[in-house]
Amino acid sequence: MLVLVTGHQGYLGTVMVGVLRAAGHDVIGLDAGYFADCVLGPTPDDPPQIGGGGPVDLRDITAGDLVGVDAVVHLAALSNDPLGDLAPDVTYDINHRASVRLAHAAKAAGVSRFLYASTCSVYGSAGDDLVDEDAPLRPLTPYAESKVWVEDDLVKIADSGFAPVFLRNATAFGFSPRLRADIVLNNLVGHAVLSGVVKVLSDGTPWRPLVHAEDIARAFAVCLTAPVDAIWCQAFNIGTEANNLTVAEIARAVTDVVPAAELRITGETGADPRSYRVDFAKARDRLGYEAQWSVAAGAAELYGRYTAHALTEAAFTGQFTRLARLKALRQSGVLDEAMFTGGRVG
Image (cartoon, rainbow, N blue to C red; front, side):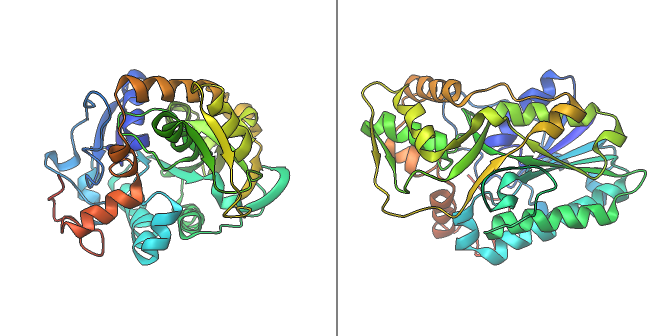
């Protein structure tokens, strides 16, 4: 199967490419290159970029670019809440409007499966009860809101020849050669390694469902080969109930792994309204999928990779932090206010 991975030079995309190749798929990529050089350790072996050239913006894709592609794995997005606050209009333009245009182009080109990376944050503030895919959607940020809108719009264009599926991923963790430092476990382990302190600014009570980047990629691989009637217009929560943890519990998992790390829960930012525990039974029951990585194992993996590759404070807070990286690209003139590059990222 020829699979297009959008965002293939991102945190999840870099892991996704390896998992899909190992499963026997031919992979091509589409990426604007914002994070292509944000690498910790050896340089990844990237697939060919669509069109055979340099960076490609999602907003420029047409149906002609997708001829011959069997399936799209759509990861590309401005991918966290601070970015949505920085540029909400651009977030909606890329995450919603460009995603829907990509789906229309894929359908027109004869692509049969469209695997969309959604998020469990669509559930917003859900309290202590487990939420499944039928729970009310209460997105609290432009990022989560855009995900809900894309899901709704893809259902409208689905038919017998075009099967969208929505993978609502829990909060990712784990090592990727293109690291992200601004997601909770990766961030806490990094601070512990660099400062000896695991610092939680909230009161530590919000629930977070977590899932390893490799487990996310495995879920997409399952959906590429599952019977069409099992995935058509379906939403699947991706993760495991064992990784439904409070922020304080995640922090304690880090202190268990990083030698002499001190836990400080300051509570200075108060209680985070984003709090939800997620039920992942549907993916187990319908797809035979189950996440493998525990938070403890992920923390140990991150500690080992951070120390082996000599993670620095400058890289951790700069190139591996999405908001800081994009601000730097804007300030240097590589990106304009609408996040267009003109193909000159580097």
